[in-house]
Amino acid sequence: MTRRKYVVGNWKMHGVSSDLGEIHSIAAGSASVSNVDTALCLPATLIERAARSVSILPIGGQDVHWADKGAHTGCISAAMLLDAGAKLTIVGHSERREGQHETNEDVRRKAEAALAAGLGVILCIGESLGVREAGQAVGTVQAQLDESLPHAEVSAAAIPGQFAIAYEPIWAIGTGKVASPADIGEMHSALRDRLVAAYGDAGNEIRILYGGSVNASNAAEIFAVDDVDGALVGGASLTAEKFLPIVQAASAA
Ligand code: PGA
Image (cartoon, rainbow, N blue to C red; front, top):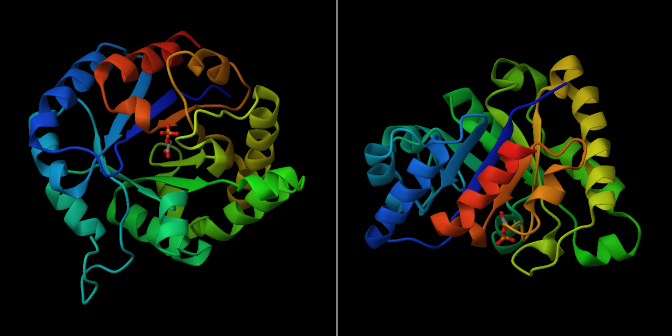
């Protein structure tokens, strides 16, 4: 099965008004690569301005609450993201799982709420260094996926286009360390099995991205791995100069 490559930038807590020009450059460069889907997940404060001014590049949020509205100070709902012009959101990033104590159950509810509202979802999973060193990475991340996956009836309509998984080993995020192609391939294939177990044939259509220190120098090798359908890119998504070569590597893969 061929799945279109998908390269998504995650700006995390970076970006103010003066960075809108960079977003324009990323949008213009990405639009010229016609065989790759791209998106940029921005801080909430930039979503509306970016979405208004760069219609060619889908803009996303980095988290969403499962409730439509209510007494949840500091949170943002799917309806609010859509209202601001977002087309997608990340859920379950390890920086939120760790920093905000989000559980698999929280992540599943967020994914279900976002999909039901019509947002695309990138659901993140990944193991710590201790788990990898203990030889338990595959089983641990499979279980994390099983427990975080939206229930089939909620997500059926959204598969394949709207729903993607990002496998991000925690020890590879922002560290310059990248999982080996063999380890990435083993994990993605194990995750594919779980997606098919959950959704049947539709599970073959869900894209599985790799994330963790992806950059212009290692992207081609990562995209050559079976079952790697793209990348979730943090640090190297902050400038067009660093991000666009990754999009080009996906195009050539
Ligand atoms: P990184 O971040 O590319 O800076 O390692 C990836 C991510 O956290 O999504």
